[in-house]
Amino acid sequence: MTNQDIISKLPYSKPFLFVDEIISISENGVEGTYYLDENLDFYKGHFISNPITPGVILTEVMAQIGLVCLGIYLLNKEFNKTTSISLTSIEIDFLKPVYPNEKVTIISEKIYFRFGKLKCKVSMKNQLGIEVCCGTIAGMIV
Image 1 (cartoon, rainbow, N blue to C red):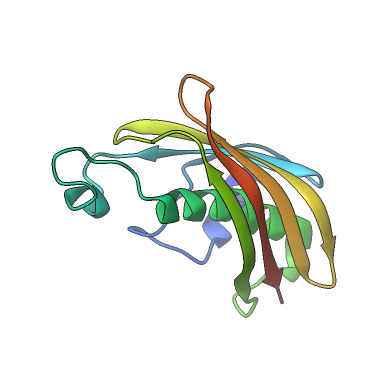
Image 2 (cartoon, rainbow, N blue to C red; image 1 turned 180 degrees about the vertical axis):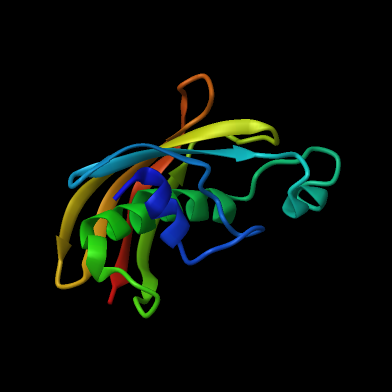
């Protein structure tokens, strides 16, 4: 399965697709990127005179790349249109703001994948390589 195959199997579309590229992927983890374009709707109101990416969006970017892309890779041919994905737990520390027009890189390391539950340690870095948020995300893939 190619990296583009994985992205094409994601159950999201614009404006809620937050994966631009998968740099590398293996059974132990994934690294990918997303560019936060200044024209995304949420910047219009968060915050009006000083737009900052909402934490919930940063969490979703980390979940889509760090959990869902990895889950699709791990399931390989078992992943299909009837496969359901649900978030079960998150614990994220937000360390620095992320602004419009930043490209972020997500690095995810699998903690475990068993009985349909995938748990990963995730980190997001900005273009300068500075960690802006990190934590753990878990979800069910059935």
